[in-house]
Length: 251
Image (tube, rainbow, N blue to C red; front, top):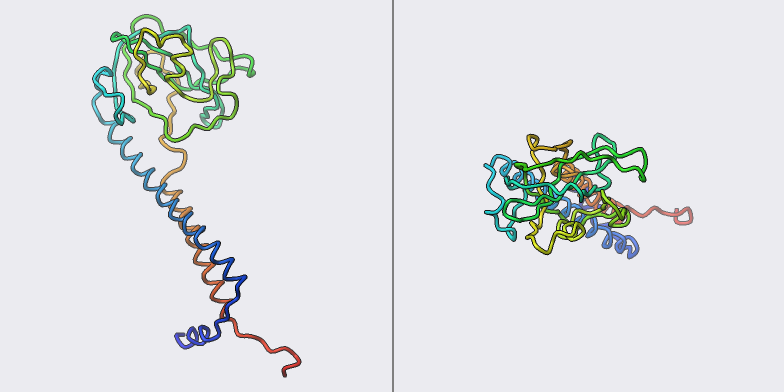
């Protein structure tokens, strides 16, 4: 077998077209494979953070440093919902059905405005007929987890689709939403949303996948890209060392 490979190597012929194609594709295939490995590592780290912080004891929201990494930290606070300024975060999928996530401003006892995500709600019969969101009155005790936006948010339409209330929005931007609700002048705004736990008053369908693509799937994609790179190298070796065949005139 070694002799066969040595013999093939002796037959090597440089084909600039084949070499150029290989030189262009090989770095691309390898970079895509390593990118998928990096994504898998990032997803594993995120999953670890989520699982670890889900076991934490909830701390008062007022005790947090809003500028630090608060992703999935468990928090608690008391306050009043502003039921007149309800946001519907569009294009949220639950069990294959599109709907909205209900985001409601809440003013805490410390005069901090928090955008609280109450969960998923089914859509109305049409885009013009929005779902009815039941109000939560009085003082409420909220416990939940902080959610910080990850990466750039994808917008499928106008950022703000409706002029009245409830207001359909495409992106979750607590500072912008607090401004639209007219509550930024006299109150401090918590820069992240809080997802309620299942015991919270007014909690709806709580469905927030940690990630859309699992680390295992990223590893699978990486294997595919590396396999394509290996196949490309094999094809380059095969055709560059393929013995020349004699034409009929050379017999």
